[in-house]
Image 1 (cartoon, rainbow, N blue to C red):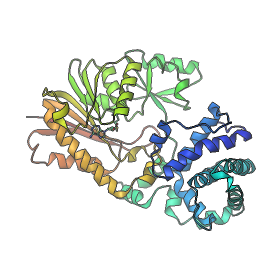
Image 2: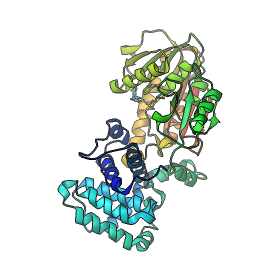
Image 3: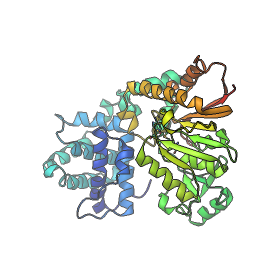
Image 4: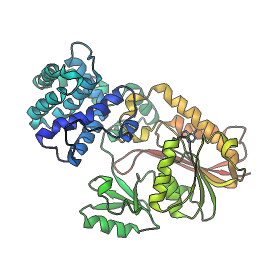
Length: 431
Ligand SMILES: C[S@@+](CC[C@H](N)C(=O)[O-])C[C@H]1O[C@@H](n2cnc3c(N)ncnc32)[C@H](O)[C@@H]1O
């Protein structure tokens, strides 16, 4: 955990974090909110340390939202009319637990932050609620001991799905999703070797350990801007589980490759780092296609990038079959909940069936564009079987592809300290 900012900066960290947590409470995604940039409150200085602390508080507050919500509901006599104040209280409750010896500063600075929110009307309430939380710490712990959302930091439907799919491992999976995620780099083989990069990182006091064929896991995470060689395209940030994709697809030089859901281009770039393939990268989002272009440029790689819904084959396909297809489909992201802690609270159970429907449509739309003998890698960052094994089983049983498809292999990576959760199925067109 990075050092906490000085006491007088903590109110600024709260003020930076409030619109983000408030945005998630309003139903927006954390990635969208952070992608827009967090505005600095007027008259305040947001140093790197303050920003890092605000981000840290946001992630932990959202990871343990089930607990914060359970405690807050017992501290409030009636619902709060301000989402900003609710966000501030959740953030401050997290900090009271994380820094029990600094509770006086937490209360003081949260009250100061409250003075700048909702016209300053809730300063007294914030003060009273947080002092109450401190006074009633033991009784609140007892009152929430039987509340499973509070204890597991996950909603009931999500827990039930994990328990059903992994009866022997679901508790361990919940625990893994409640940790801070590891930070790993992928070395751009065209510009540096893994050994050279590890050496460069040690020189700036950033020890690493090797993971996978091209990866280095940082023993102490640090901001991307402090990673030597990042701007020059020597490395990218990518989880070791995601780094499996390009190796499983194993594109050869000169092959026609389609990355059908490519943004921001992490796996597309890896494919190109490993082989001089002719790659077409599609994504339905114009903004996210710009990120593919930026990433390829930073890494010194080239591909054709098109904004398109990959299911709309007639609109983007020139009729020449692909030797390799990566279908890294939109999914629940249940394998990366520790990186996107908002998702478990924002998603609804019915969303999983909706993702599965889209995934099935993508698989069936892309299949005719694959060359005979060609390979398609289906990938998700989900651990729910509907999006993974059940999806592929249904595809293999589909009369439309019967006799033309062979499953060469599938693997489910469950989230653990070394990597995030992913699913891969490698399919070959046999006829
Ligand atoms: C899991 S992300 C892909 C990550 C990417 N492969 C990488 O490694 O950086 C899924 C992407 O699919 C895109 N997407 C969703 N539906 C799509 C569709 N129908 N056609 C094309 N892209 C789609 C989303 O915009 C999102 O960027």
